[in-house]
Length: 273
Image (cartoon, helix red, strand yellow):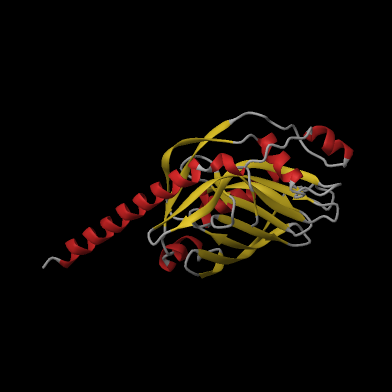
């Protein structure tokens, strides 16, 4: 008996079964989506101004984006070390890498007065170079935010659709010391991603913010650092994981802490992290 051939047949059968189950789940999920949206509306700009909530321009554009799937894979330690061993010490787990950087990386021009959220291209230049050459699959990640209070710089993994994974399963969180140099990181990696099914209509950024506000998820006197369309895990199977569209809101409270709020892109529900 050709055991290798039998093994391949079993793997293919499991993949086909997983895709079949995902399609069933998606049809049920999308088919009931409108039931979760409350027929409530507020003048979000007026409410934000009245409650001293800082924000950038808010879009009411209706967007379309597909679900995505990722193959469930475990990291190969040898593959990781081949990229990282000359510049850092790392610990490799199933889909996580913990790294200590031998020579900390300066965030050029960043000081205690630097505003949290965005960082300039020049501030990130050395870190981006390190990511692209010394981080395992680093070119799959892009900068999202700088949390000054927590001393963290966050990058998120891009997917086949171009949107990022925002639930922590595909992310690099860099630790920043008091000298504004990066000295360590915690990296998670989702498997290779692919588009699952057709594009779906999702709620607008404005609707996402309204839903979050009506749910008391945006505190008074806070700042909406960023809001962007992204992905969050919705179904985990043996061979693959399904991600669905969510609006991710990064909200900095008046105490300086940053919260991550998810609004379901399909049905508008508020989701806990």
